Length: 98
Image (cartoon, rainbow, N blue to C red; front, side):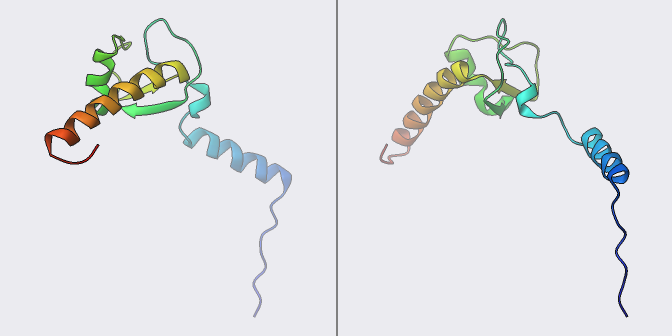
């Protein structure tokens, strides 16, 4: 016995893509930087707990208190430098090579 596959018409396909778009979260390219007074497009995002200390050390202020912090290219570089310093200090503290 062979089963017939339902043909997907262009109208059905358009309906399915609309439903998917409603269910999917916003794309990262549509978001803007979480740093106050910056409206550039987002490059990366982090959980707020993981980069909270690095944001303060870099001298940046976050708008509100979001669960995820979205960063543009310029602010990502600054945070990345601070995170690298933190990791290096932790590794030295535990006696691991840096």
